[in-house]
Image (cartoon, rainbow, N blue to C red; front, side, top):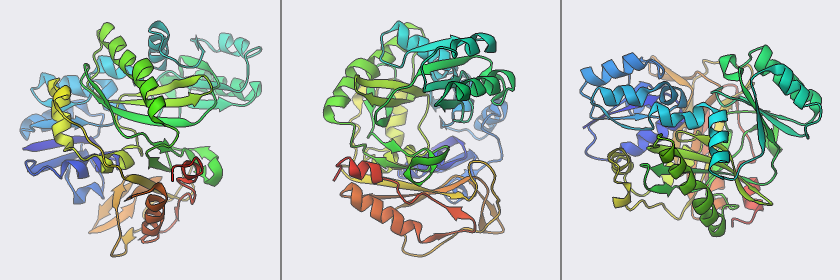
Length: 422
């Protein structure tokens, strides 16, 4: 059996490593992959947004199953194009991927179907948005409507900061056309929780919860990034909260998408905040989170391909999806200066005896040497019987990975440990 995974980051590496556990899979191709992924799959120089190139490769190489992992190709309709070519896929069609592709769509969906979320207003011109901010409460959350590489959200502490964000998004076009329309949201407080879920549009199976660490520096300081590390499970996500989320958020979201004629099949990511008034949705993603996938997938006991195939066939209810009781911690090693400006091209070396997994996000392979080629370079994920053990194991392993200009947070998991996970 031949599998194709579209994408080239740490999330895709985690997916590929998990798929490799299935002995029926003979070959895995990564489009485009990266230098680290090249050790676990055949990398093909076709970009994740090159839909025609992806489809042609799948047909020419008789691919049996495709996993479309990143948001851009999903929103562009990669799954639709592959299905039309007779290639079975894991991932939502374009009409369902809009749940991430348009924040206005997702906010209106939640409002229509009474799914708990922050209060909001939608604006299509800067003048109206700026006028609204004259009296709107602050802090406020300013969101570009479309995809913006995970950077289209500004938490404005003051009206001046909010107006600056509006100018930048709508007039300066810092996020391109994604900022043509914006959402201004009520600022919520409480612990954040990420819950990835498998769904075939009928059944929804939440995965182990996780806690992301978005800020670049320790103590949640510095700029927002794509994520500097994760732990799983999230101690704030109790059994009681999980039941409330299933009843009020997860199932209602799947049902709402069905009613809208946009049945979602794939991995639906729920970004939640546990507010004093109960859990509320901050955002939906139409795919595995990155780096959430790097802690959640290592805890999956059930064969990943079996689950993905069942999702594609609409028979997820037939599969008993099981997760380990262990805990996991992923520490991202990045290039100094990320997320703004950084140097590339440093050789990555790993000492022998490292525990856990290394999921490579930004690296190239040159003359057999693995070189840094991005802001987030790799993630080191380790498991443990307790969260404390998982965190200790991850940091011990991080010390065995070396490259020039490396930096990482020293406090991944600290908040979770303080919350009483152990």
